[in-house]
Amino acid sequence: MLPRSHGRTWDKQIRGIEVLASASTNEPSDRYEWSTSLPSCTSGEGATPFRISISDAEIDLLQKKLALATFPDELEDAGTSYGAPLADIRRLVNRWKEGYDWRKHEAALNAELPQFTRDIDVDGFGTLNIHYVHKKSEVTDAIPLLFVHGWPGSFIEVRKILPLLNEGSPDYPSFHVVALSLPGFGFSTGPTKKGFALVQYAELGHKLMLALGYSEYVTQGGDWGFLITRKMANVYGPKHVKAWHTNFPLTSPPSLSHPGLLFTHLLSYLPYFSYTPREQAGLTRTLEYHTEGSGYFAIQSTRPQTLGYSLADSPVGLLAWIYEKLVSGMDTFILDDDEVLTWVSIYYFSHAGPAASVRIYYEVVKSQPGRELLAESESTTIPMGYSYFPKEVINFPRKWYKAPNLVFEAEHDHGGHFASYETPAELVGDLRKMFGKGGPAFNVIKEKIGYAY
Image 1: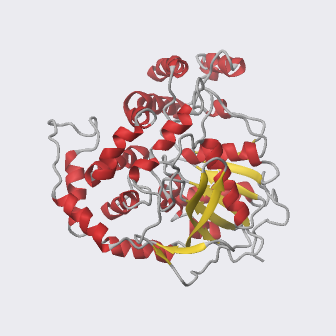
Image 2 (image 1 turned 90 degrees about the vertical axis):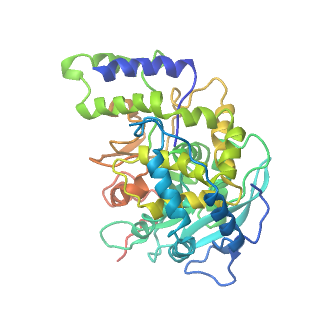
Image 3 (image 1 turned 60 degrees about the horizontal axis):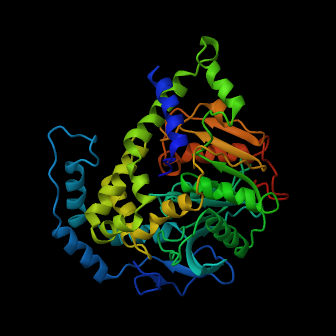
């Protein structure tokens, strides 16, 4: 999840919101199976078809570690105030030990998601072997779309929206979908050098799309996917990236450096210009996230290696660390225990190990000294669309997001941080409206309108 902005500027701004609210290794191994037969969708020259196939030895080791788990004590009536509840983690660990069948869920992922790997060179960082999902629509002129996940997500976040995006219809557009595992996540290798930040993630995503034959494409992402696709829009648009959409919009809170927005904010204290109840609730949630739910960001952006020892060695620690964010990030927690365990198992069995995934926080923060992830907006020029979900962890008033190229907005009555998994129909519906006939980004890629006739 992202982000907790850091530093003095944000601390000043959050006080204003408070006042308002009160009103492992990178080398390939035999852990995975490189298929000799192509799945339903080929991925071009240079691609290697991929199937998840974790070794029996690794599954046995996981079971041994779970059997030896030591749990902490818990205060009476602690609830979720102190973090992941002990009863929840005990239940999930017991299920992980007895009843949960990784092989069943591994097979389901392989059956549902056409997966590949390919080598991609990143300037200054050598070659990374990148894992990705790629499934083309049966509609020839479907719109190429790159989906980018965040933390604690992975490629699994495309699972529910993939069939909807691929669906052909004369009534709405269809998409060719690419969903990569970011370096250090899932079954991609991780960087081995310091400094792999937004520019490098953007470069990698763009080079992947070019390698797949998509010289023009659109993007969708939340969490880190927002920052990465925004960087792609700036660096590779409008020549290659034609439009972008996010379900996790970030912007600059009112400040002296944004006088127009500051004036609008001051007017909100007047009855006629006041924020709506939903906007008030969003500001309250943002404050709660900053003061009570963002400690992980401080740790992951300053001492990721120290945290990494626990994440890599303790499956129970990894489970608790991720589970707490899944629960707090959703409007209604919709995952059953097996879904949670599959989500976490992808991290546990990941190619680079779970510690690699949290370094993105450190690298991005350190790459922008003196800047605030929230306090400084980065403008783009290509068409962009925002979807607003009420239980998003950072939720500002709509007026704060206005921009000349913001061509599409949609507000939903339910949903949270993990929109592609919690509210897939709503998210895909927004993409269809944005890129469909009559939408503001219709025909943004010439001769790629995505309709089945």
